[in-house]
Image 1 (tube, rainbow, N blue to C red):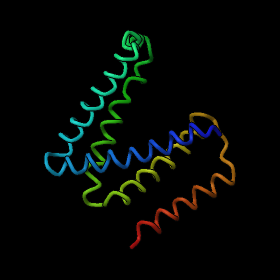
Image 2 (cartoon, rainbow, N blue to C red):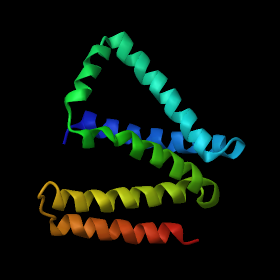
Image 3 (tube, rainbow, N blue to C red):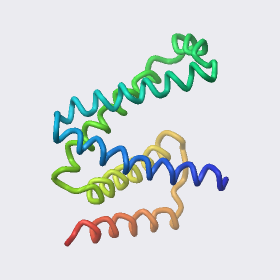
Image 4 (cartoon, rainbow, N blue to C red):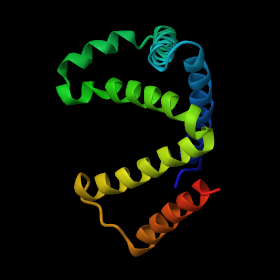
Length: 141
């Protein structure tokens, strides 16, 4: 495995924790849906500036030639932000995020099997079971 890709994935996990914390705090003062809107507008502004500086904005015209199903990712992103900011105040950051990771791991394994025709090894299945048992142990006080 590529070490740079692994470090980027770890950084994405750290940033997920920071974003979830910030959005849930903002959601307490406004509403979770307003916090989601603000988060997405801030992200849009940031990515727009990056693409302007990099000169990539003209490539956006290519979006009209892709399969329409590929254009709904923003719906899921907005849903993730909203649902996370709703769940953290009652569950706490670590409990909410471990459940999110459990959902990600379970659904990604299922998608690998059914969409990518991947075989699930005994080792991978054992790791999944151990992770889910660990999740249950983590959630119990």
